Image 1 (cartoon, rainbow, N blue to C red):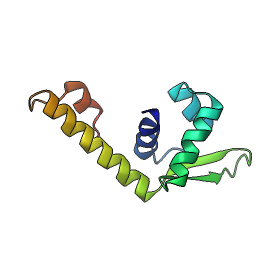
Image 2 (image 1 turned 60 degrees about the horizontal axis):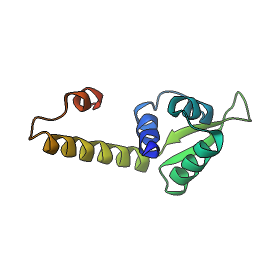
Image 3 (image 1 turned 30 degrees about the vertical axis):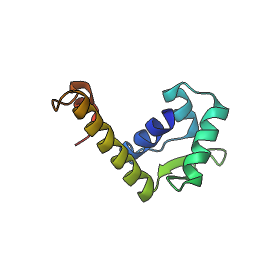
Length: 100
């Protein structure tokens, strides 16, 4: 489920320049794993990679409109799931991490 976390992180940090190395470090995954996950997101139209103007060896990873919409949709479904599992009270931890 790290791929969902990656999409949510990218969607919630659109003002930052995020590189694959950032994803690798943040999610504690290998370069090959990060590349595979990002390729999957890119093939589904959820992210795009653009060459950095400062360093042509790096790609800036940004979510597309579809990626942001998918992230919001997933967040809402997870919130509803947690709310239902806790008898309508919601999850205190999840409410803190839900960016309303």
